[in-house]
Image 1 (cartoon, rainbow, N blue to C red):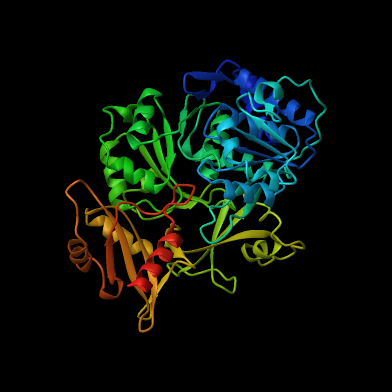
Image 2: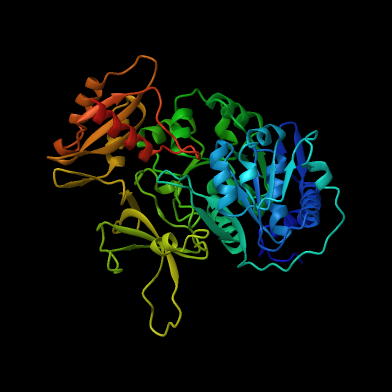
Length: 521
């Protein structure tokens, strides 16, 4: 009988015991079977221990999606440490912040990326070793040499130990490190795999950065199910569509901006014969984009999901509910409870806006070395009769409402709501109306301070199609769809919108740029 999976690296061990020759990981022309992947993880863990890694110390990797970027995190936790994935889009100064913030001991990167860090690595006093995926750089360790280490004794690890630190996108200041335990990651993999129906015959495309919790989830849910992961570093949306067809992908998870781009492309004929589902995370997918995707993929099931790094994943909308309530974020995922609370902690009534609060096994350990911010977001729930110890839940900062059937609807973030003419306006509602016109490919709304109104609404929009679009035409279309107080005071037609390192629209950067533009006028 196979042992239960309590630790993150148990996922690959169990899969290798069950089907050692089954494909686990595809990277270009190379595919590793589960037995080979397990051997490589073992070897890497021995190498990390040989370098002196102590229990709980951090191992970072700054790489594109490649085989070493999968082996390194699973090896780090097997050696008793914690892994820190660094988004490959970050620049040297941002990488330095992460390395210094959580005192990374070992960094795994490529020779090309290592060269970009020449000026910042001397500032990282806690960093003891750098491991490169290639050779030929003096003073650092080659990946092949790391894997050649002799077996080492491993420290005892349990499921409540920290396994990873995921850094948030940092759109409102310096990125914060969210501490995730083995239990968080394993419970999350089991929950997500259960409602997506993942199985050993699946092939999942890793299109999102592995530094993004939903991106790393493609690894954990696949390995939990004994499925194959295909690593893909796409340059253009067409490249991703070709990979879906070539690799016969059965499951795709992406963020709304990527889906907006994909919706504009001609999809390969018959791709929905094997693409069983497409899942959305990282923000609400515009209805127009969803409709375009469903028209292109009539046999593929859409899963609309909501999550936050502090609790991995919170809700999903089952495919059978999409037609009835396409603007809903669904209900809590298995083994999670989602509450909608007033500021005093009491439960909101039906359709009453309140804060989304997440409780359960996926609640993380807070922010690394930041007790003040942790206390703001991770707070105790009211105690139940007889309960002695507090239960800590994640207070998301997102405003939602729950309908009479228990389905949740995202309204907006507390710090993003636009306050104009005495009204509180959700920017996503304005963006949804803009998408419904069919004139825009993507857009972003924000509030600009105004002495008379409190804030006035500004909308930046990327035109749909090659024929172009004028601000006047979009403004006229929005006047037909929105009440007067929600119609933007200004519309700017742009070629592209700012994004953060995880590919999400960066509303804070958009707001800051718009405010600066107004001041300069």
